[in-house]
Image (cartoon, rainbow, N blue to C red; front, side):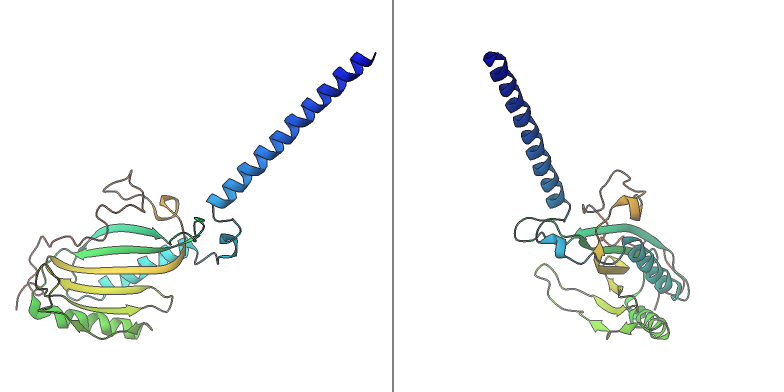
Length: 223
């Protein structure tokens, strides 16, 4: 009888040990998941940031507005979205926010003599739509350590906080829109890049590069 009782007790201890081990594994796994997904002891206090869908729509609207303000109209090519997640906390916990970029390149060559006219059209549009507009920047002749630049640019910030920059330089003219403090997201929000549908949006093979112009425009390409 005593032997039977001791066997029963050992079995109970084994079962208890297994249960405690499973609870420990579950706790550790849950903690690891929370840590990896921005819900650890530090990251859980982070602000969630701007909704990614709202940021996407704001960037799209800012680019549509700027491109539509160019007269005569110039077609553009799209570099798609580029998502840069904010740096991890000191303990390695990921932050829930990111900065989102998108660049459009004008397909027509713009002659340098038309740079200020182009910037003026956009500045007028931006002011009329409540943007905070910066000054026209002329970096022509500046040394970039590799070559002398002909870059000119002007930037403006939309009422929603989207920064839009018109950059004019070789190899072409581009419009770039960006917004920081955005909830980190990927293709489920921004869609897939048709040029590279299998690419993650937080890798950078081409999105911000300016695509060289491919056509001549009767107005913009000539003095």
